[in-house]
Length: 117
Image (cartoon, rainbow, N blue to C red; front, side):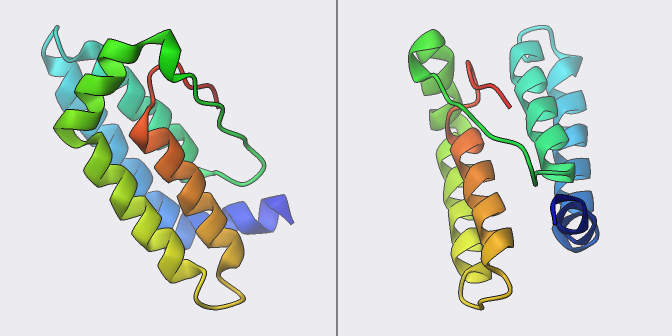
């Protein structure tokens, strides 16, 4: 089921989301100050391509200042977007597994610093 879910996810959602996160990470890494944020975007890209079978463990206390900066400058809106997409997927019974993956991405989008995938 994990492989089938990842294949369907990749073609329905993952390719676009993963590429967007990848290019955002490149833009962040152009500046020296943005490299830590770029690394988090690459973490999101990796999970966005194939999220089935992976777990996300967040640890806000590991890097609280960086997480607060991330939340203020986009993390909150990203998490809300993934939450909304997850709720839309969950409206149908068939979309519930995809909704769960969106909720996993919302968790990582909110506080990526210190999180492990």
